[in-house]
Length: 425
Image 1 (tube, rainbow, N blue to C red):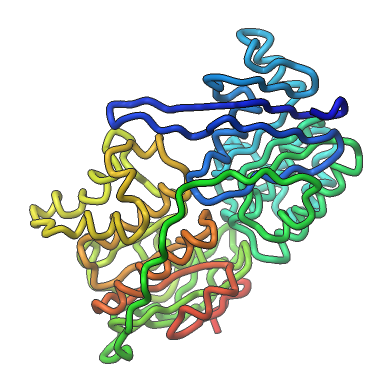
Image 2: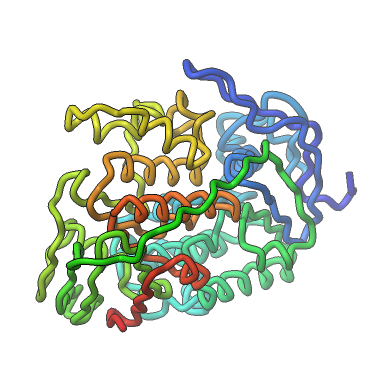
């Protein structure tokens, strides 16, 4: 280990045990990250990146091995000393941006002394006086970064900080992380973002058993009348149109992608279309509100924590008293979740939870599917599984509307709609 290492790991192991069995999240991990550098934890979804970050932050405990952060033996901490370590030594930003913020406080109220200018640098100056719950997912991610960095701790731990950001917003975040490292702070980030991995001074590869990608489906050309229709839709917040007279339609068997940067209004459009928000103007036509009519995949997955992965996926069928006919097992296999069938959602990674939510949405063969950023928390291989599953659903006749900031998603689409400042083109 380097004598200048801010973070040192030696033979760190972590196993989770539950009624569903034992899962080894980390096995004999050894690494070091020097002070004033950026260290990247990379690997497929479920490889233990989030677990390792939580161990470094004192949120979880290793079963074996040595964990040292800024000269502190983290495994020996407890009570007041552990609380002091979390307060003064490390700032931990979880993968779900909203969980890093107090929902009823404004961004300004949650920032430290130097945080306002930092928030402005990541494009949040117009949103400083908005409560956290009113921000888009991408805005929450940038606000969480500003809150975390403004604490001034020598070590900052971040779980997928750019997952929900378009390229421009991600560049602002990456620039702030570089600035913090240049000031002598140590940044440890779990990420799938190749740009963030490329600039890291140190990389720790965490592995998982490889899986083969599912073959693509040959889809018929979309035809017939539109199944999803959004007509001159407007949604305002505080007098500002977040969605502004937006119109689009999706036909049976069509995979349509709604592309837009963070804060462009795409999630709001999907929530209004799905019936979660009331429009101020315009109209939406969908097949119906039930799972087999219109299924919805939100950025917050809504999995039931007391049900296993398999039980969550099969829930729409049980509610309708519909025979599964192997559909649950087929989707679990298709989305790389078969080995996790008996685990609870909390015993899986965020990426695996996201794929579980998609499988649940698809299991009752819906007429229409609305999916908000369904691949945002996936490594490249897992993202391919997501797109193959959507492709297969369209091949079976489902009309799919996918909102995303990822420009690469356009290659999967039959049609691409773009949204900017709430206007669709």
